Structures are given as structure tokens and as C-alpha cells.
Image 1: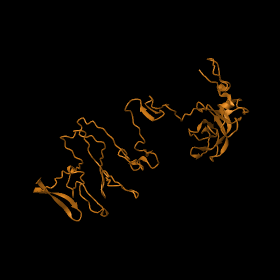
Image 2: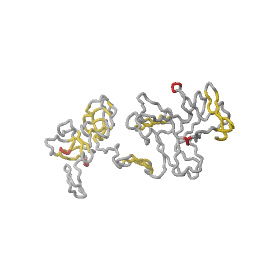
Image 3: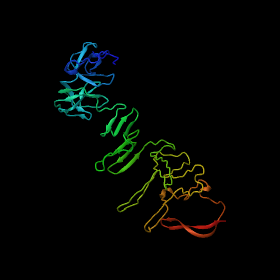
Image 4: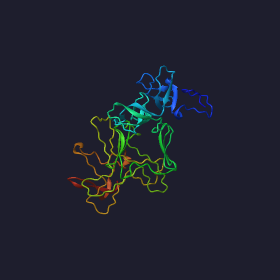
Length: 384
């Protein structure tokens, strides 16, 4: 039961008695202090709009029948009817023509009526019944007053349902926006339909940090201008756990490119580059690595297995002009390479110190050097 009086409505009620005054309850009565008349007029004024219900949420609107003399004055308010009121011809985008039937909204701070419907400042007030020039100025227009809930504002834990059986719901639970189907694994969240589509962009801490699906180029971009330092941070992370169950592959990421048409240049499946800016410096012998791949096997899980730190495959239907495991291209300004392999320790290449190979059994083409051709290394059957 009510625990506090409001206006002329008492907290001690008798069940079944009529409360409405005239016109089936469209007129309500409250003290002037209980009405919000905005900050433009000094007091509640006859013939001007008011708002009420501020403490519990400003939903009530109407037009005052009397002018306030003191805050304790009882003021009758018409919550319906047609009134000539001041309406500013603007909406959320700027100046806007007002035409008959346009929904109108009132600012809960200024009590100014317009087509602006920003939920942070406005609540529904009624409907225009005539036209006002779209010049952003105030015009006296006939307005159908109507007390209406904030139908375009869903509050905490208020569900928005889709489907005849409420198949899908969207809810802001106070911390997260959650979309749930009534039955698990139902439907899909589609943006566009393959014929009519649009870009999708999710911004980070700044406008320069975002994830973008560019529909016109069919391209997904992840742009991060301020990746924090440390091993745990990156612009893009792919984390996966696979229970193989006799499956041949357990992949965190897979890239597969199909080529059509005529190639006019190089074709790359995956590219990785590091670009050092002018202000980049190094404090020691830090390494710069554009691509890293590795294997970590806990305990003895790798015992007795074949392990390849990297693998390149060429499954071809014909013999190419040349075939190489990999290509090294060092710009002239970089000088000559120190070695083909940088070994962190001798075990990395199984280096045999102080020994020489015995019994040359063949050669392996080591490098196809531009301007010189293929160069070979001898292969020995054993070390001395």
C-alpha cells in the first residue's frame, strides 16, 4: 500500500473508491513544489507544460491550469487535451520541420518542447497538430498532450523480445548487454543478408583503435595504435584448446587462400612485417622478429615423437620453374647476412666442435643466388 502522500492523493486508500476527478482522470492535482516547470520560467505558470514524477522517474507530463504563488499551492494539471504551446523546430540532428503527427518531447531540465528525443534529456510529451518552420526557433503550435511512457528506453533488466514465442531476448543487466535465444543454438545474428550489407566497426579506447569489417572490400582489419608492452599483449590474440580425440589436426588458426584469375605479381598467403618508426631505439641486443613459431611440450609429452619447429609443403601438379624452401631478400643497405641460421646454443644445430666430415657422399643446393646461380654444400656420411 502507498507509504507517502503525493499531491492530493493520500497514502490511506479505500479499495474500490473512485480517484479520478474530471475527464476520466486526465486531470491530476499536485502541489507546485511537486511539479517541474523547467528552469526558464520562475514558477509553475498557467498554460505552460510541467513534468512530474522526478523522484521515481520523470514520466508524467501535462499543462498547468493555474499559476503558482507558493510552493504549497495545489495545481491542477491536464495530462491530455489540445493546447497551443511553444515548440522548437529541431530534432537530434539539428533544425527540423515540424508537421502534424510528429511526436514531441520535453526536456526534463528546461521544459522546452521539441522533436529532440535523446533519452538522457527528453521524455515523450505529445504530438504536433500543425506545422512549424524547420528553422530551429520556437513556434506556437497546437499540441495534443499525451502522457506516454519512455517506450524507446529499456531500463536495467527490462527485456526486449523478438519472435512470436519470444524466441530471442536482449537485456541490459546493469553491466552487460546480453542476447539470448529461448532454445540453445537457435538462429544467427546477421548484419546484412549478402545482398544488402553494411560495414561493422567496433572502437577501442580511441577512434584510432578499432576492429573493422569493410563490406566494400570484404576485408577485416584490427587496428591498435597503443599495444601495451609485455608478452601478454598484442593487437590480435587467438587462444585455443583442442581435445584431439584421434583428430589429425588441432589448429588455433588456419589460413587457406584460393587463387583465381591471372597473377601480375607475387602472391602471399600470410604476411608479417615490422616497421620501425623514426623514434624507435634499442637499449641492447634485443632481437626483432617479424614471425615466430614454436612448440612447447610439458614434461615428456614429446618423447618419441617427430617434432618439426616449422614445416613447408609444396603439393604441385606440375614442375615449377624453380622450387625453394624459403627465400631471403636483404636490401643492399643491410649488408651481408651473418649466417643462414642463428643458433641459440650448439644443440640447436647439433654442432660438432673440432670435427670434420668424412666421405663426401653428395651435395645439397644451399642457395640460388641472383647473379651467381645455385651454390652447393658437401654432404658427409659421418663426422670424423
